[in-house]
Length: 129
Length: 119
Image (cartoon, rainbow over all chains, first blue to last red; front, top):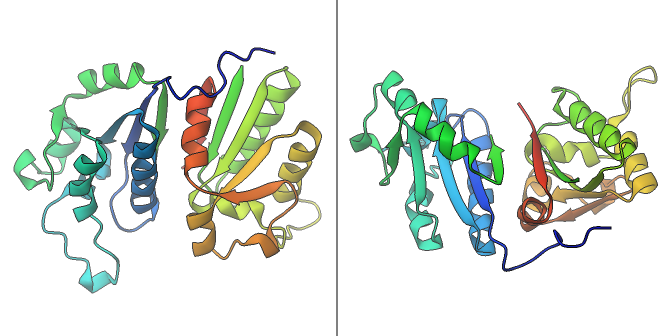
């Protein structure tokens, strides 16, 4: 049996979490954010991507009172405190929805799909929702 | 190769759990290792032993249990996602255990590939 790839706390992997879904309507966005927060405790190289309707997760001024759901968008602002600083938003997704960087609750890096796919290809683990 | 698997959907509405199971079974038959299957979102419903599909349908809960028993696959259900959906120790099928999301991240670190099965 090969043992060399067993758990090694020194080995850092590149983890990318890909958010594709709107923040409400399904539970994916909320539960995925929990995964990102837990991953921060493992000292890995973590990045979070927002594409498709996932870009709505970062929209400023979300008011969820009318639908009786928890507005979890402030949690994205806490990610920096967990050393999760690589937040990527796909430019095409943002533009297709009439949004710009000013509409978002956190500072992000806006990348075209070509550039984003290169970064994605360089990851060790991609967890998409 | 050492695989970790993430299952994000329940056993009947979506085919994701079936695909995950078929992949795990095929990988093991080819001599690979499946070190863990982690169940998240509605995927936690894969662990519900009260699930009773019709007799001419596949019983995925039972198939997972058999896979765990025969090949020592670690079937882990996320505690937070499970509690939300009423999945507790009382209804856990054989071979499943309830633990935290850290088990998913660890699977990503330890395995050569982490595969996501979802919608």
